[in-house]
Image 1 (cartoon, rainbow, N blue to C red):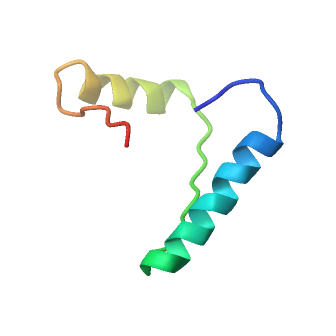
Image 2: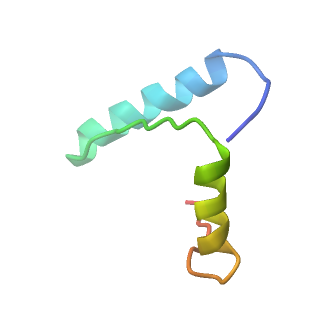
Length: 57
């Protein structure tokens, strides 16, 4: 996730992902969410005890 920056950066990443998904037979799915206290509290309950592990691929 990046904050600030320019629009072409994220758009280029989406276009590369779409092209790659076509070549490997997958699909690109973009999800967006609006953070709120309820969602962040639920996420905290999973992250703090180690039930969720962040992965950067």
